[in-house]
Image (cartoon, rainbow over all chains, first blue to last red):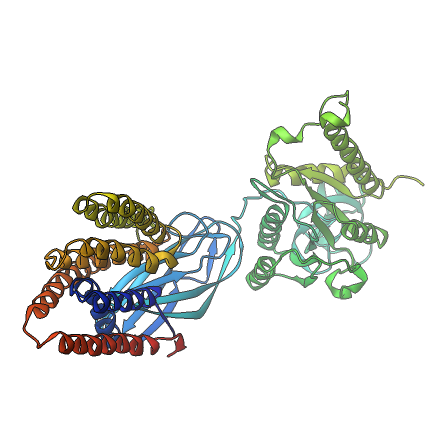
Length: 440
Length: 181
């Protein structure tokens, strides 16, 4: 602990010296009577002050939570010597809210007797997803007369991961191609399965149980049923973390991470294999996998997503080949603002990947009033009237970009905050039904 | 766990400190007449301003504020002649009360929620300190009234006592420099 003297010691000592000098000079006891209490307080207080001896620990009641949950940090204190006042300051990370309701340091002052143990629960509300470390504690102890201060910083960091609130998704974007292993998705190919596909004439080697007896009786020669096999699909969530546009009501990255988490959970529930590419200044990836363990790995990686500013050019050729397996559906969640992410998506299309783009609108977090395209007649620049025109030009550029993706066979749907993710996915699926690579 | 309270403790301490300082500065005005009163009024105004500054944003003004309040009292003493001022212990207690309240106002932070026990203990320590200051001041005045030889002897005793006191305070205070324990 670092011990610091209070500023008042110097003031009291100085006043005492002046008063004693005045008393001597005037030959009167009154100045001495006025200053004596100050001197006695300093001497007695400092003589009685002892360094505090404390044991401090902190625990969090859980290591994983969902946005909106409350977590409790318990700070345990044990004093070997009495402490007249102990300030306990818990640093609340941005994204969590302390007992005061805001993300700011929260402090409590307690008094501890010798040998006393105290457990102080501090409830924090999880406001934003992310990986946090709790237990950043600052201690400040005072003696009885507040002449000395002891300060200590403890880094009892306990991890806490806050996951975004999962959205209920009933319909997902289906890949064009399935993999060879058995799963829940009905393949477009024909083979052994449950879903009926067609009938055809019997060929040597067909199993008798495949014979369609009605068709056989009608045509006089054996006909067999063909079926669609159930296969797995591989889905790669492509998260653009180059840019985060923050507004009053959230940010594009918040929406994107929430959507990625919901999609990952929904696909994995259907026994598909899901991978992740967090493509930004800091590139992270997870090869497609299935099961609960994969979900937790994906969520853990998503929680560590952050915008890392860099001007270095990043391309998908830097990714390990197995991260983007052939025939995989790539669901890109991006605000389509950074040139590198835009180019990477074109690269994916050029390599023949099945791509669906959920475009998180950069205006998602801004007030609705600010999104209008403005009037048709621009005001002169001196009256600040070019903003609506600039917005329109910008919107046209984005529309052109979307159109370029669509000409290459990718479905692109804009996602604004008011729209539920499910509706966006339905729009993407509808887009994909009609999407064809444009000639030329 | 209750949320941090607003700045009530700090505000109460500041107002109380300024009130005590105002009383300490204004009471001597009633004890003098004539041209000294105008000079004392300026001193009182300076004392109140410094005291308010020390209680509000400038804690480094605590020492000057105490010195000015003490100087005002000394000016009144100069006009009293040889008569001992029996109210000196009250002035001493008031000075201590003002200084402690001003320091408390500086320590109280709106983000820190003090448990009631801590506040009660602080008030108790403050009350005992003020009561002790009253008693100590009275003792000093009583000791000054004791027969202790002629003027030269008294002066020598006073010089030695003052030197020892200042030396003791300085020695104790010097040991409190910032250090890691």
